[in-house]
Image (cartoon, rainbow, N blue to C red; front, side, top):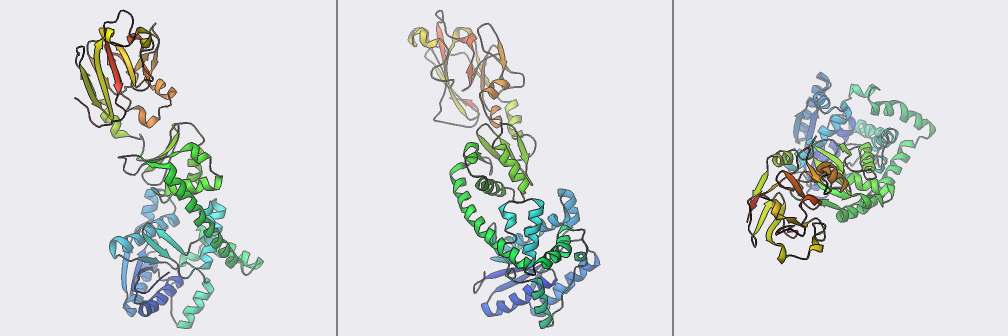
Length: 475
C-alpha cells in the first residue's frame, strides 16, 4: 500500500481505529521517510462531545509533530438539503474532503482510512439486506481509486478487538463516540445486535464474511475490466455536450445480466458517483423500453431513453432548455431565386443547398412522381408555386400535408413515427412556402408541391451531408 517517500493523508476521528492507524503511520513515516499529515472532520452532530474529539486529535498530532487539518461541516444541514440520511451525508462529505485535501490541497498521493475487518463484514451485511449488486458484496476494499487518489485501508486485516488490545499495550487512550451505543443508526444496530448473534453461531463469522468480500472483490475487478472494454466500444461521447454520452441499447441487452449491471454502474458512476443499485437497475430497464422514459440521478445528471440509445445527460427538466429558447426565435428567409441560381443555407447544424432550374433541364417527369430522389434528404419542388422560402425549427402545432387532397399530420407525431430521438426533434429544420411546410428535412416532403407536367421551374432542395456547420447564414 505504501512505499518509501510516499505522501499520505490519514483520516483521524479520535476513535480507537483511527488512533491505531495514526500510531502505525507515525512510526512508518520515520522508517520510510513518508510525508504524513492528518485530517479531522467535525460533523456538527454531537456538540461538546465532538469538540472534545477535535481537541484530542489536535493534541495527539501536536505531541508527535504531525500536521493536522480540521474541517467543520454542518452534516445535518447537508443531509436536509440533499434529502438523504445522516450516515450517507457524512460519507459523502468525508469523501469529498479527503479528495480535496489529498489532491487539490496538499498533493498527498494516498489517503489512509482506519476501517477494520469487522467494518468490512458489517458493510457487506448492510448492503445485502438493503439490496445490492456485486459492489456491495465486496464490503470495504483494501485499496480503491477515488478519481486519481488512492484510498488505502491498512487495518482491514485485523479485528476491532485486536486494535483495542494493541492500544492498551501501548498505553494509548482514545475517544468513544457515545452515539455508537444507540441502535437508531442501521450500522450500529448491525454492530451491536446482529454481529454478536452471528458470532454465537460461529466465532469466526466476521472473518469469514471478510474473506468472502475479498473474493467478491477479485470478481469485481474482473467484471470491471470486461465492462470497461464494452464501454470503450459502445459508449460514445456527445460532441460539445460537456460530458454527456450515449450507449447502444441493443448492445446492452445482448450482455449477461451481471455484466450489463456492471457496465451500467460504471457508465453512470463516471458522472454521478453516488448512484445507487436501485438506480442502476432502473436505468437497465430503460434499455428494454421505448423512447422518452427517464430517471434522475444524484447530482446534475439523468438518464433518458431514445429509440436506439440511452443518453446520460446533464441538467433537470427539459433535456435542452437552451436549445429550445434558441430554436423558438431562429428563422431564415430565402428570397426568390432565378433559374441557374444556387444558394446554400447554414441552419442549426445542417447545410442545405437550394438550386433552381427549368423543368426541361431536369430528369424526366417519372422521376418527379414522389417529389424526392433516393430519400428525404434531397427533394424536388414545383417552384412555380413558391414566392420565397422560409427555414426554421418546428413550432408546437405545426402540420404538413401528407396527401394531395390536403390531409395533414402534426410534425410532432410525424417525428415520433419516424423514430427521431426526442432530444433531436427540436433541431430538425422545416422548410415553408406561403405558410405551408413542404419539407421536414430528412423526414418527409409535401405532395402539394410535387412537380407535375405543367411545372416550368423546379427547386431542388438537398442536405450537404458530408459537411456540418453551426449558425445560420447564406453563402
